[in-house]
Image (tube, rainbow, N blue to C red):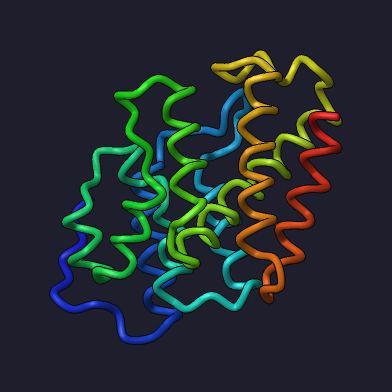
Length: 193
């Protein structure tokens, strides 16, 4: 995809439309793990959560774009050019180094979130809360068969989500978005026991 644009979008609506379209093209042949559902539904829901949280437009745009660099051939320079340095920095902060093994990537992500910017924490919360909501829904339908679609077993997933739960709870305590961290905590208990 080549979006020919020299200036960043002026309005929030224009920026959200461009970010959605860009993410949709980047993820157009991708599907959610173990489902026939288009991948774009995840970034859409992450961005919607950020809107609910009252996030600024550059953060909502990052919600649409958070997996683009990690999971497609798009690069950060183009995101910076189209959406600005704040959005690009947030996308970079949400991008995992896929050259590392799963355990190291997840451990590094949890450690990073312990001291990352507040906006980075919100972006990751929106991303992971949507993932956890999806896992819970799929678990209701599939039971423990759901864990076969992941690259790591339930116990590894539990350690990861429990680590995220602790970070989100601590970082959002007393903040306007705290109830999202509480929902994350509740869902972690429901999904993993």
